[in-house]
Length: 160
Image (tube, rainbow, N blue to C red):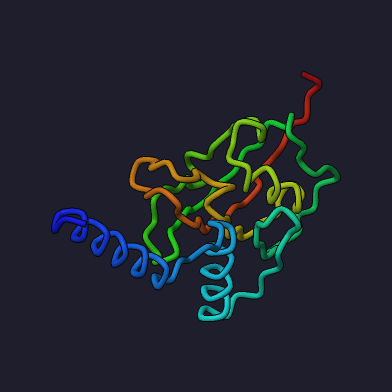
């Protein structure tokens, strides 16, 4: 074997050895987000529950309406959205609430908002896969866990 062949074999052997020794984080993004959320909840003494969807929620006020929102409900809400570091990325106050069909909002809201009735408020901590996923959205980096305080001002359910 010539010197070049021996050098290539040695280099390949070192690469294989290093690759086999490298620790791989084989957790899914949902598992990583769940760990971030659980640490956030613990560190901030938040009394949240985990929905089967993966959304963590804390009902602040259940509301007093007779209906809960469904996907074809047009909802009017006020809210504040934050990253886990406390950075506010969006908010709508009572003088300029958001009115939108629930079906057009992120999956985390679609799972969480129906847990309250009109007049209710809820805190949703949403894993990135139920928010904006890997995509950057304005000032929200990709793979961001989202923390929302939402008040459901009103809802209108229509047959569409």
